[in-house]
Image (cartoon, rainbow, N blue to C red; front, side):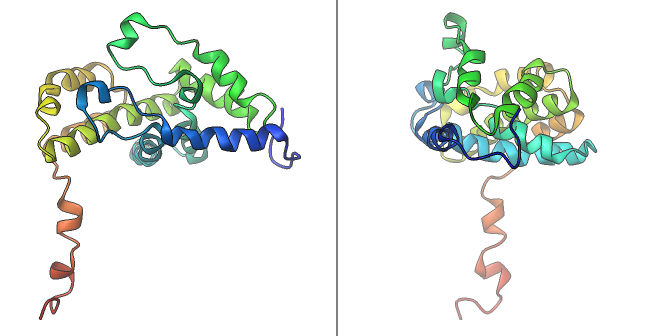
Length: 203
């Protein structure tokens, strides 16, 4: 198994190009939600921080594992594409070989043999934390869509509560979900703007 200190290979360079294309892969719930949905790469970025937040609240110490797992949790979609909840009823993705082929010959092969296999099994706290983060990012994005006036985002409330009650693993994730329901997506910049922070601004 190749890890740190290995010689950079042609497959490593190809891998870097491949993960870059995740920015071009739209998540297929855009079929229902319309334009403006985050790409797979954009989704992944926030999942990393969500997972770290949950891990710290759950007192899970191995942040390196959390970061690695969150970074690659959807990496198979570079070859299989995303599947929304309607397509998943009728479509079966051959994800394991897609992920295996993505990492074969790269310096990151252990991400497949160790990190992703653990994530997909959903037996460890790390895997449950990252899956919770994956689910919660949907709820954050729905709140952002509601802020923009999306009617369909409101129509998903009942289904998302089902996810909260039946699909989230950790107590922290459920607390975050509850907090999101009354959160203001604009608060961060309204409270940090120059007229609030700099009393002499505009004079």
